Structures are given as C-alpha cells and as structure tokens.
Image (tube, rainbow, N blue to C red):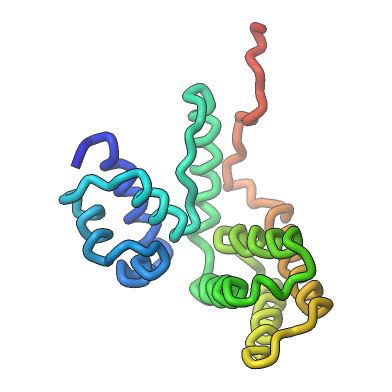
Length: 196
C-alpha cells in the first residue's frame, strides 16, 4: 500500500473499531465484499477512491478536500470532537442505528423531503454527541414508538412529532454547556487573513 493512502485506511479501520462494527457489517453497509475491506485494512490492496468513499460513508464519515491553510483549524475541531465521542454509550449507538435503519425503510412517510433530511442529519449528529440519562429516555421512547409501527406505519403528524423530538435532542446535545476540559478551537473556518 502506498504511503499516501495508508493514513486514510488506518483512520477508517480505527473508526470501524471504535464504532464496534465488524468487517461483515461494514461490508453490508458499504456494498464492498468483506474480503475487499480486509485487504484494504491490511494494506494488501490499494483502494480506489470510490471504495474509500463507500467505506467512509458507511461509517458516517465524509472524504472531503479542504484548503491546506485550514488544516490546523480542522485538526483542532476534529481533536476536540474526538474527546466527546469516546463517552457515547453502546445503548445510544444501538438506538441511533435502529432509528437509522427504520428511517432507511420508511423515508417516504415524512411530509416533506426537508423534514426527512433534517431527521437523517439529526441522527447522524446523535451518533457522535453524548446524551444525558433523561435524553436517552427520550431517544428510547422515540425508538419504541417507531418499533410499534412495523406493520402499520405512523401518520405524517406522528412522524413529524418524532422528528421534532429527535431534532430537539440534537440541538440540546450540540448547545449544552461543555466541560472546560474539552478544548475549544482557536480557529474559525471563515477567518480571513488580517494582512489583506
């Protein structure tokens, strides 16, 4: 494997292990064979860009191009968020995964594409933001309500209420006062050079 992709494949493997996703499950999510994923992780196969993107997205990551001058700010942001991802509970991960699977099957039940996209984006953030015990109860309740409708889908109004509850959880987790031990970014992504 070339030096250029080794760092990326190591990060993908680490993300898979942190999320406690097996290669078999990642194979099902990404559409690549388990053998292909194993070879990428071991460094015996040079992955193509399409394979890297598929694996990354299956792990709820994105491959992006960023201006080099923004890399210190991006690294700082990534480092500060990695502190909070370590404290997520297995229960929270399971509940969010169940909601994501339910959403994948019933996306068309939402009143609008915008509401469906917001619900999906809220779930994506809840994969990384730790919730309090009270917030976990709310998430469990939303999951249980959707589970009851396996045979008979909920009304659009009920889906809207559930989407609102999940969005509220996301907002609470994003805006809650953070522990002072979590470093704040010294950079802003929209900073301009003062010398201009």
